[in-house]
Image (tube, rainbow, N blue to C red; front, top):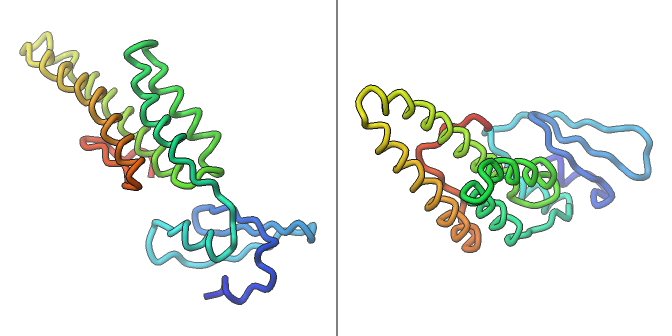
Length: 167
């Protein structure tokens, strides 16, 4: 692999883009681009960061707080969407796993909002929308807690019924 052929690769910083790794050296003023083909769409960031000696922080507490911050909806109304969004946007390049967890949270939140919009006409038509509101309220309460526990056990987040808007 070409990463092992780089000399003095610990002086490089890396920023992953869709199909490029952008290396920016502190000693050179120019930018060097290496294009390569991904075999799969997901990149094993831990493997690349290990080979390039990148210091991404592993902060489980912040990931747990990100999942539990969804519960702010029960206190403030919309804070359960804004706080994870802000944490994801500001920390996704600094904290290992924040990108994956943030996308899972936002996909879940957007999906549940769409399901709430679908339940509104069902309340007036069949009266079954009330059951949908209750189910979605339970999902809003249970799944952030379950996924916060999963984060503390080094497991991937799993939000069922979520549509993958952010990939």
